[in-house]
Length: 302
Image (cartoon, rainbow, N blue to C red; front, side, top):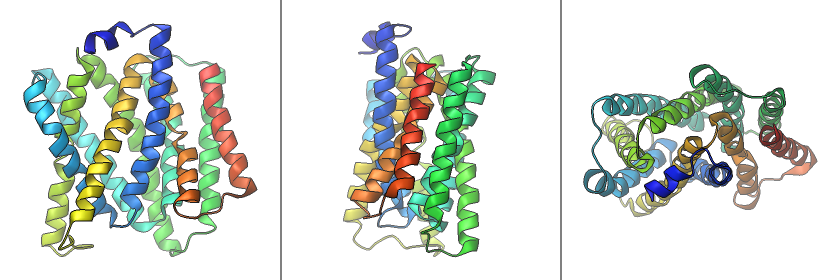
C-alpha cells in the first residue's frame, strides 16, 4: 500500500487523490467538531476521543510499523507540542462560545495563514488567482461567523473570550498543517508517520481530563461513562479520516491547496447545524456558503 501511494506522488492521479482526501477530511472535520462540542463538556469529549485514538492506534504503531529513529523523534516531539496547544485553544473556545460561532472563525482564519506559511517555509508557489480564492474563502467564513454571532445566547464577555481562543485556534491550524506536511514528507512511509502521530498525540488530553477531575475543575467524569466512551471511539475513527486524510493529501499535493479545500468543512458544519441542531440557514448564510465553495474552486482553478 505504501509503495502504491508513493508511486502516485507528483502525478495527475495523485493530485486528484489529494483533492478527494481533502474533501473527505473536510466532512470528517465538521463531524469531529460537532462531536467535541456536543452533549458533554468539550474537555471530556476531547479526552474521550484521544483515549479512543490511543487504544486504536497503539497496536498499529507498536507492533505493525517501524519505530521512529533519530530525527523522527524530534519531529514527533514537535507534533505533540503543536497539537496540544491547538487542542487546548479549541477546548477553551468551545467552552465559551457556540459551535456555529467558534468553528467558522477557526476555519476561516486558518487558510490564509497556511498559504503564507507553506510559501515561506515549504517553498511552495501560488498564483494571484489562488491568493484571491483564499481571501474570498476566508472572508466568507469569517462573515458567516459574524452572522452566527447574532443568534448567540452567551454573554458578550464569554463571546469575546471564545472568539479570541478561536482565532488562536485558527493560527494553530496553520502551524500544525504546515508542520505536519513537512513532517510526513520527511518520513519514507507516510502510514508509519500517521500511526505514530496518532499515538503520541493521544496521551495529553486524557491525562489533563483526569487532572481536572481530581481537582474538581469543570464537568466531572460520568459515573457510567459508556456513552462518553462510545463517543470517543466514534470520534477517533472520524479523526483518522480528518487528520489522516489531510496529511496524506499534503504529501501528494500542495499544502495551501489541500488546506483550502479542507476548509469547505464549514459548509458541512452548517449542514450539520441545520439537520442535527435544527439551526436555520437563511439566504445570507446560503450566499456566504456559496462564496466559500467559490473560493475553494478558485484555489484549484489557479
